[in-house]
Amino acid sequence: MREFMVDRAFGTDVKRFDKNIYQTEKGQIREAVLSADLAFLWQPSLTLNTNVPTCIDIGGGLGQINGRFAKAGYQVTHTDIAAEMVASAEKEHRKQGIVEHYRYFQSSLQNLTDVVGDEQFDVVLCHAVLEWLADPYAALSPLIDRLKPGGWLSLMFYNVDAKRMANMIYGNFDYVNAGLQVKKKVRFSPNNPLKPESILARLGQFPVTLVTHSGVRCFHDYMRKPDHNAEQLLALELQYRNKNPYRQLGRYQHLLLRKDRT
Image (cartoon, rainbow, N blue to C red; front, top):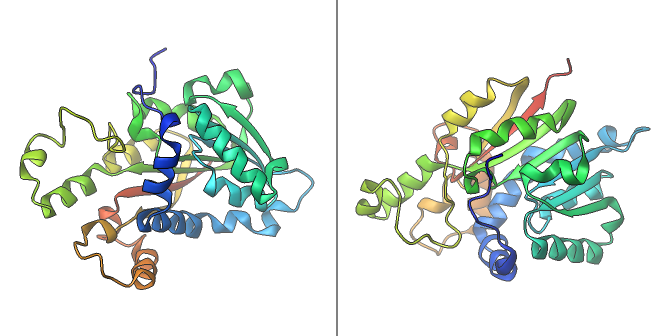
């Protein structure tokens, strides 16, 4: 089987990853948009039943978003290819008093069967993973296979069109003309940013229905001046996240899909 990951995990970069991604305004916007799109899945009416709802986070990182599912009563399976990332997530969940809702595994997407067998889940989270894979499109089928009938797939990926737009605004014309490729990779710059329409077209081949489509950071990345009102910006990001043309400019695209029941 072809190796999915392009020799890239963040095991030795946990603190730097946390500082550069999560503890920044862009990270706060990302979490807010995902939370706004997913909040209905955390309602008691959906989780208070005889069967404990289940969630798997593939490439779960430090586990901020899946923590919301744990607090809502889900049994969460947290996976990441980096052992250090898994350990850091478990430590944080223990601090929050929610660790009893978890199973933790060091695993790549392609090796999930080794740790969870053929298990299916009510919710599958896969955020900011596809763009690091050698063949992102090959990952779609395994993700959808993990869904129970009627289950939800939350898929977020890096938008190549937004990357091109931002670099045009910054005046990085040589970089744009080089196809957004450089000889020396930037540590947190994804290997394979994706075209939203290509992902949507491929998803059309599977028994899933697109329910929500949002842009993540539709405005933030195009702003040069740092002296802006963060609360106002966040409110506008949330207001326009699922409205075109702004959605198309989101640095990340978030798709929430539901698997057919039959």
